[in-house]
Length: 244
Image (tube, rainbow, N blue to C red; front, top):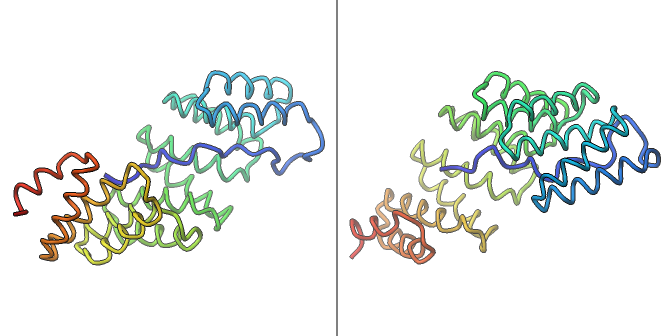
């Protein structure tokens, strides 16, 4: 299971957007900062109240509408999330993160054409926005379009060389096309970048699977044992089947 596209709706609302100056309308910026802090602390109702008050104070404040979209996105109210992200885009047609996040919600809602269109728009507006490449890579991976998925993961990693999740998902793509050596390299990088992550156990388990495919049973068993120690389900079964 690769990292899903649901990542990267957090921390995306910004204090200053393209259509007004940072020195004006201080009260709505204060409300936005409060909303962002509450959202990052998963105090979603409090965040909603702050973003909502900001839109009532200034109906043209695109980042506050984006914040409302984040709240609804987090609460899995996807129709409402699309509405608020779309309002942010209406107010600011160059709002890259709003396109990216709306694409996420379209994907979850079963509208893949709109999903891909939004990722493409985000990338065309900001070719340096690594998150949109990552999310589009996941779009292609879900459809087993491995060449396109790898191209997008490669671009995301070029833009952000410590992008651990992109290495993890690219490893899945390499595994699916039976390039086990490349997959192992990517799992190695992920583990080095995220040594304390709860996902290390899965990376160890999957790296063990790749090593087994390359007839490296000794190191495969070492990985599965480490994964079992970390509590990853399924590792014990692999040990029973393949390890002495």
